[in-house]
Amino acid sequence: MKFLRTPRNLFFILIFLLMCMIILSISLGSVRIPLEQVIRVIFGMPVEKSAYTVIILQYRIPKIITALLAGAALSVAGLQMQTLFQNPLADPFILGVSSGASLGVALIVLSVGTTGTFLLAGIGLLGDISIAAAAFLGSLLVLVFILMISQRARSSTMMLLIGLMVSYITSAVVSLLIYFSLPEKIYTYLSWTFGSFSGVTWSQIWIIVPALLLGFVVAFALSKPLNALLMGEKYAQTVGINIRRTRFWIIVSASLLAGIVTAFCGPIGFIGIAIPHVARAIFHSANHRILLPATFLIGSITAILSDVIAQLPGHQQVLPINVVTAMLGAPVVLWVLIKNQRNMQT
Image 1 (cartoon, rainbow, N blue to C red):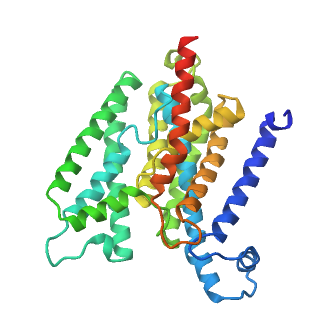
Image 2 (image 1 turned 60 degrees about the vertical axis):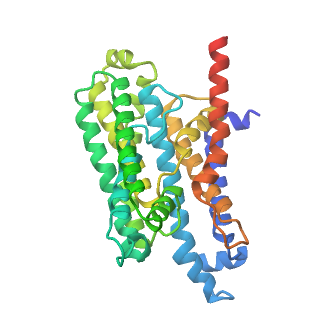
């Protein structure tokens, strides 16, 4: 259909779908709230049950904002990494940011005290803040190290290998901590690795939003250099792009987006690697001026949808977000692999 081939119309459809997913997410959950009551709460009108107001304003809206921004952040970061490394299977965590965050959480959860002490994850808000701070510091240290290397690395391939080595080292340390830890602490750490958009408070959102907005601004400002990098670093240099400076800011933006999300939500997989390919397939474009807002919207929709599925509407049980994102994202990755294989044969 010609109507669906116009980027402007596609963006309108995506915005409409995003609004529908937001309303659906507010309404569904362990407690189902009628749509009429949702509208009344949003506009400050009287409702049948006061509990509806508390559930929506204190729990579901913060969770939706978190999911929306997290999905957008991971998708935009993944798009930048795929362009920088010219690798369709690159994700936001390819440089080891997630591994650094995991190490930070492991150090503060698995090595805190012994018998008679509290687990940080089990003491309410203080525990949540401690885990988020540890994850952010761990990802920040990895980011600083990668940025130092980026000023000396001659190619993106070298940076990719360094990122992989950092991931292996941090994973080894985490495995060592797990080996010598108590089962209760291991369970706490594993619960964080499952990922979740719940538990983020309004006070934490006021930290997340400005940090992610900064990452988005840098990413959108890099749309022209990203388009040039599609033709390779040599071509980008011929059109006046400073490769080292561009690489530096791409890494800053992608790592900031991925690091903040990981710190507050845990390592959310597959969104960052799958959504850029979905955006390319829908818009039939490689132009980052189109792909960046497209991945923003599609990533937000996917994250909110994943959270709705994870909530198992009408049940008290909640699935780990990574289980749902893997179910949605893995088929996309398989499609990319099959498509690339066919292109190589033709």
